[in-house]
Amino acid sequence: MYQRILVPIDGSATSELGLGEAIRLAQLTHASLRLIHVIDELSFALTIGAYGYGAGELLESIRKNGERVLHSALDAVKAAGVEADTVLYENLDRTVQQRVLDESLSWKADLIVMGTHGRRGASRLALGSSAEGIMRNASVPVLLVRAPQGTS
Image (cartoon, rainbow, N blue to C red; front, side, top):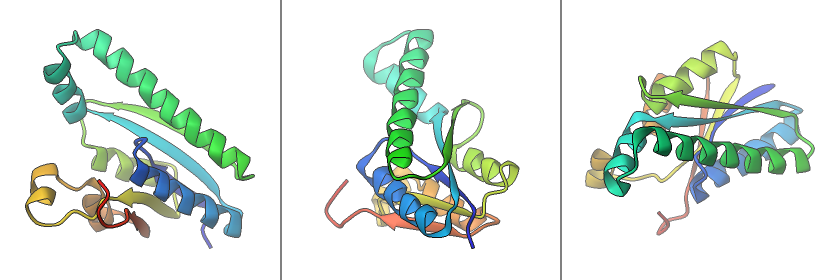
């Protein structure tokens, strides 16, 4: 059964749903989790334009937020009695999807668990879908935990 579960997290409520499911699976199978947070180029670029920060200052702020997201998630995992580690990637040259797929291979994950908004139609086209790309290209099973309908 699953012994190494990769869990991409971004701090959103949907991401927390995925983390909760990964914790339950890990408890059942005695698996360890790897929690990863990716600072990606698109988020970085959009934030610079929106808030007028200098690139260095903004990157440090985003990095600290990523560390907080990972620390909070790790606390929840440890409280549940599950073994885990964390990785923060500054991914300014690859997509989130590429980074997660690379990590699943290099860490030898048995499963990827992640939250998804389950967007359809124009909103999916406009916002893209890392979850869909990961699901389509992963070499291991992917469990997508969908947000309840009507949430964003």
